[in-house]
Amino acid sequence: MKKILFIYLSLSLSCCFFSANANENILIKSSAVDREISISVSLPADYDYSLRTYPVVYLFDGPGYFELVRQYSEQLHQAHKIPELIIVSVPNSNRFQEFVGNDATNFSKMLTSELSKDVNEKYRTNGLNIGIGHSLGASFLLQQLSSSSNIFQFVSVSSPVISKRTNLNTDTLFNYIEHHCNSRGKIFLSKGNEAGVYQETIPILAKNAGAECLKYTEIKEQTHASLPLIAPFLALSYFFEGFMPLNIKGPGEINSIESLEAIGGYSAIASYYERISSNLPYKLFIPDIIVSRIAFTYLNAGKFEDIIQLFENEGKDRSRLIYYVSNRLIEVGQGKYAFVLLNLDRKLNIKTDFNQKLFDKLKQGGDLSYRGLVK
Image (tube, rainbow, N blue to C red; front, side, top):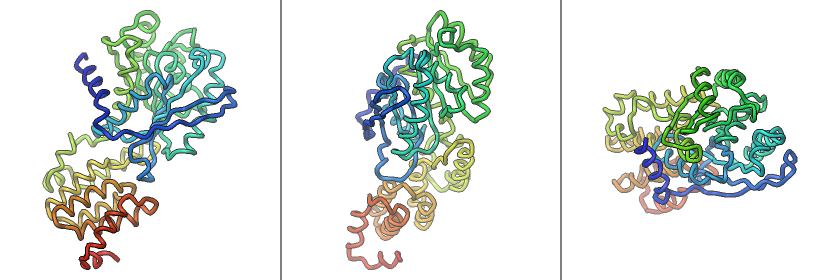
C-alpha cells in the first residue's frame, strides 16, 4: 500500500506535464441557506472546443482538496481510465450544522434545488452526478441516499460518521443502500485506521449491506486525516471501471489490422460502448485514444476510406483529434485525405472553428485535386 501511496503522490506532482483544465468561480445566491456561496469549478481541457456533455463531481469540504481531485481526474483521463469531468467545489460555513445538524435540510435544499440547477444551466452536463465526501461530509451524502431529491448516482464516502450524533445507524443505511443499488447507483465506502465509532460501524455496514453496487476498501496505512487524499482516486477508478473494454489491456494493443480484427474490429468496440451506456444516465463516447489508434491503424494499412468512415461515425465533438490525424496525413503525403477530414469536421462541428486555419491553408495550397474530393 505504501507503494500505491507513492504512485498517487507522484501523480499529484506530475500535473504540470499535462494540459491544465480551466478553473473558474461562480457565485450562488442561496435562499435556502440565506447567503452567497462562492463555488469553484474545474472544466475539461477541451471544453471550449467541443459541444460534448460531461459528468459532474461535487466535492463536499471542497476547498480542502479541490485541486488534488482536479489533478486526479485529469491524470486518470490521461491514463484512459475515466471520461473527462466537470468538478464543483462545495464549501460550507459550519460543517456539523450543515452536514448533519439543524441546517442539514436547508443545505441539502441548496444543493439539489439551487446549486445543481445553476450548474446544469451554465455548463454542458450529461446527467451523471458524483458526490465525494469525507467524515461528516460523507455522512451528509449517506443521508442523501434516502431523499427523493437525491441527485447522485455515484457516491464516495470515506470514514463516514455513523452514530446517534449524526442520526445514522447501520440498520437504516442498509435500506438506503439497497434502494440506491436498485436505482443503478454505485457507492465507494472506505476507511483508514481509525478506532472507536469508525472501527465498529463502517466494517459492519460493509459486511452486511451485501450490495453489488457497494465497494468497501480499508486502507490501514491511512489515518482519518489522510484518507481523503487517497479515496477520490480509488473511487473514480471504481465508478468507471468499465471505461476501457475488458478485452483491450491498453490502446497500444491496437497496432495492426490483425490486432483490430482480433478484438472484433471497430463495430465490436462501438457496440461495447453502446452496451455500457445503457447502464449509465448518458451516452459514453469511445475514448479519443481508441479512435486515434484505429485511425492510425487504417493509415498504416493504406485504408484511407476507412478513416473517413470512422470519423463520419465518431467525428462529432472531436475537432482536436481530427486536427491531430489530419496533420499526420499531411506528414505522410496524403494531404487530400486530410482535406476531406477537415471538411468533414466543418460539417460535423459547425459551431467550432478549431481546424479552420489548417483547412484554409490546405485549400489554398494550389492542388485542385483536393477540391475534387469535397462537394
